[in-house]
Each structure stands twice: as structure tokens, then as C-alpha cells.
Length: 412
Image 1: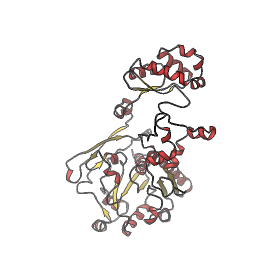
Image 2: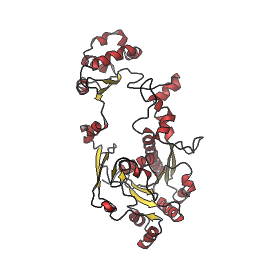
Image 3: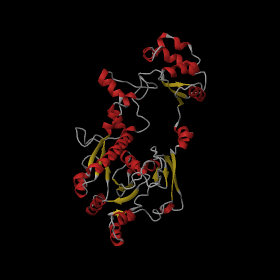
Image 4: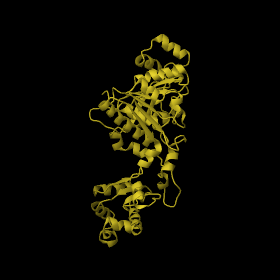
């Protein structure tokens, strides 16, 4: 299948995580993504500790389904190539600090003058305006500033960064949503848009009901630990084997089922636990009773018994267990990418497994093309997209305006 976005071309100026994650989503949906890299490459290519044929596992996780061309944007000729590519693109995505693209002579005003239908997306720490506009930002910074980190960890303990980089990934997701909405507007009105995504804005939005609790009730939520501040039976309990069971018994039917499975039927008639509100009011009494009950069996045993009784539950997985889970495998959420070796390792097969595309569309296959070696698509992009002849391409390569991968990198 060609993909839902098969007729869309993306010019990708992004590096590291939030931007590449956004453009990978677009590539997974079938868009042609041309990744413009500096001469040294996207800095995430060198993130330790795991590498395949010279590129880091970090880079491989977020750059499939893209072409790579190295362009020195500091040189006038490199700027001209970027502008020419933008004329033929539908979307530009960048995640530099605000003002960097303008200083390169590649800001929205310049590129939209060449292509009025262009959808432009900027991803930054704090957005294109405001008092923090020029501050540097990374995932942990926005987790800290948003209040999200203050709610992560155990009560009484220090704030904890989430193991999943939600600051970066959330911005990439919101950026992809904004881009797709802007494309629809272009279909309807025939004009482009500027999509301005702030990592901090995204994290504030993701506070969701916790923000509402504070804004309506004045409560400042603390660390959520293993549970939920509204539902005492929405939490983790440690089983006999030391593994945890995640339990979400948040209806009366599931509450009764939980009591039956735990052999604690007397709790159903206890007036302290007669309703969700009462259970929450008396959570200090209830939780220890449930913790004691869960020590009687192993985690997987409890999980199967609870599921059989119609109670939502799961054993808390480590990452290795999660990636081996039959449901995860059935849904194609572990994908293997293959490509040929490059340069001195030309005989070495490039092979890497990564998390898959969660968007399933009936009748569409999600591609999983191995991330391009640095500059591997230089000649093809210059010829196919810009229509340059071999003499002009050779001159650009000779002068260092554009660079290509070592011999053998393009046969992937």
C-alpha cells in the first residue's frame, strides 16, 4: 500500500527526539520524509550505548521511513538547496530554538513566499513567544516545570522523572496532530499554516484532570505513587512472588468481583466500603486489607483469576516482558528493520528491532524502512526532487555544499 499520506512530502530539519518522532509518525503514514542533516549528522546518531553499523539504537528508534541528505545550511548554496526543496514540499518541520531558522535565512516568511501552501511546524521548549521563548529545554526540564514530575514517585519521596520521555514524545504527537489538521485546512481553503508547538504547553495539557482538580478545588496534587487519588482500588499491589499486580476495579461490579477473588466477601457488606465515595474516604483502612490479601498468591495467578472474574488487572511488566507479550507481537508493535552494511562494514547486514506504529488503518500497511545512513539519499533527492543533472550534483558534492554517505551506503 502507498500509505495515507503518499502524496505528501515533508522537509525535516529536526534532530534528537521530539521533531524526529513527529516526522516518523508522518513517514509511518506514508509521507515522503526528506531529513536534512548538518555535515556532522543528527546528534542522536551518536547517543550511547547501543549501536548498529555506526548509528545509535536511539537514532534508529525514531528515524525509519526517511531519506537523508546532508546540506551545509550555513553556506548560501546550501540555503538555496533548502529553499528549492521547500518549494516542492508540503510540510516543513523544525525543532531549533526560536529564531534559528530565521538567522539561517530559512524562516517561515522566506519559505512561504516561495510556497504559500506550505504547512510549517515549529517544535520548541516554550513556543515562539513568551518570557521563556529563548530558554533551552529538554524533556526533563518540561517535566519538572509542568508539575508532572511533582506527581511522579512515592508519597513522601522526591520528584521522579518519568521513564518514558513524555515531554519530547508528547510534543511530537501534538505536532503531528496539528500538521494533519493544517493539511485539512489547506484542502479546504488552499492556504498554508504555522503550527507552533511548545513542549511545556503539551505537558500542561496532559495534566488533564489533575489541572482541573486544582483549578476547581484548589488542591495541589502530590506524588501519586502506586495509586489514584480518587479511586483506592485503582492501584498496584505486591503479590507473593514480589511482582506487582495493577488493579483498576473502578465499578461496583468489579469491586464485588475483586472481593470474591481475594476471598474477602465480608468487605462488600462493610459500611466503610459500601460505595466508591466511602471506599475513598476510608482508603487508609481498605488498602492495608487488600495488600495483605494479595500476598497469598503470585502475580500472574492473581491476574488470571481477576480477569476471569471480569476485573481489569495486569501483572506489571518489565520492558523485556512487555515487548515479548503475545498481544504486542500480534499487533506488530515490534518491527524488524533490515538494510545492507555501509562503508567498511559493507558485508555486515544492518538489522534492528524497534517499537512499531500504533496507528492501524484497514487496508493499509505501515512501512518500516531502515533509517538512511547519513547523506545516503543525496544524489537521489537532488536528481529526483530538484531535477539537477549529474554535473551540478557532482559540483555540489565536490564543494562540500552537500555530502553523501560512504561508498555502499545507498544500496540498502
